[in-house]
Image (cartoon, rainbow, N blue to C red; front, side, top):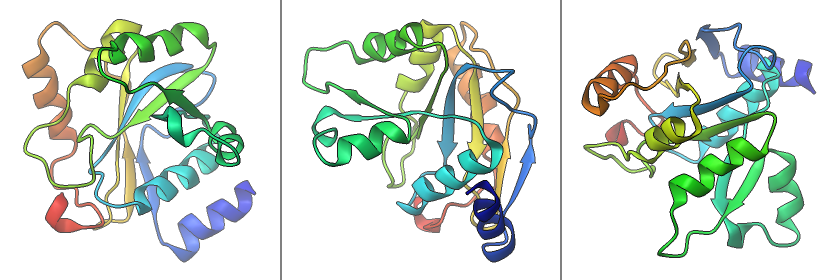
Length: 182
């Protein structure tokens, strides 16, 4: 399957992977991975192919209602973890606990929190990384240049504003599938 994924990703689609290409299961076992710009459902499939090609196990969270028969088996097999999104829950704490409960957990999130254009990113991913004491790894969904650029691990500081400026700079010039949402 990995060979087929490489053939489709590199030869048919014409994409490439640049940056931190030694990002492997042996080096970083826990991280928050942010994928941006998230503008289309196609992003999910690009992520699945990237995951297969790099052989890095990644995870995602979804509302617990998605994890019902028969899809629950598929979502769990591809790294999904259900999360209770009812009001009054401390979701950052609950998600950070997933890192403590697992030996290997790399949570992929879209910092925008939606596929639509946003002026500011959500901060949940940042506080999850901080609470779980894990690095943030950034990767681009750059449809203009057909590439996934992967950053070195970035550890949060106590300066949210400076950290967000640093992270947003990584995505400068990147265009998502739907350019109006980038």
